Length: 124
Image (cartoon, rainbow, N blue to C red):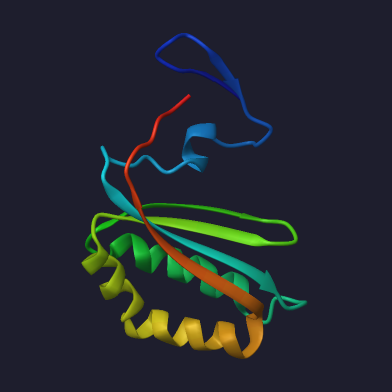
């Protein structure tokens, strides 16, 4: 699939969907990013369904701006938020707390969370 950006350059996607939909459309800086890096246990064991549910739930949270995710040997999910308060509210969500516990109990060998303030971004 090909799409043109404002400068007239063409982007070709190896995916069957919209390339722009793979990258979160964030507002002008500053905003915040939560980077969740993980190594999974073998098998699904309900992980896929919970991941879909968590993304849908996050999208309903006040202050949520977008999400990007990729997985090969290491999974990296970056969610974007308007404020640290919005991130704290998401972390404290009861269903998200349950998913976090399930992750520790059965889905992840290990993980790391990083919270960053995005000072600058640009697009190609």
